[in-house]
Length: 164
Image (cartoon, rainbow, N blue to C red; front, top):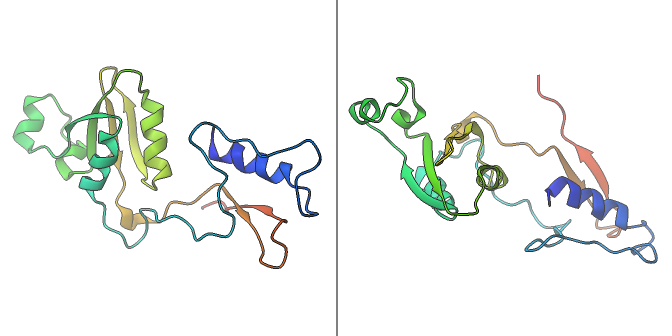
């Protein structure tokens, strides 16, 4: 269940008077929990943080076998890679997906972890992703729930400003 939908359900399920309206409850999908509204934000790859291919590969390995990261120019030519491949800069990864794993699941996992994808390609037999440098700007949520210590059962949905 997409995070935005979960956030919307959470906002709609609380009436601002201290609880959910009668007959309503917050429902999440399998393996999901209701996010804490007062906890500090989860760490993300962002400004000032160097990109770490080892961390990206470890996340990708949860979904299948990592078959390619850095390529030398000679190796890139041998495998038919494009001359300006992000693999040459150690910014791309190829993952042979496990049976039942879909490309969009891996892309969502990378985005949720804070990676900025500049290429996300379903190549049929594998998934290819290229990553922006963490130093180019922090990932920005579309919207976030904001609570208050004074009114713990009252929240509002705040949208991030558009970038120029």
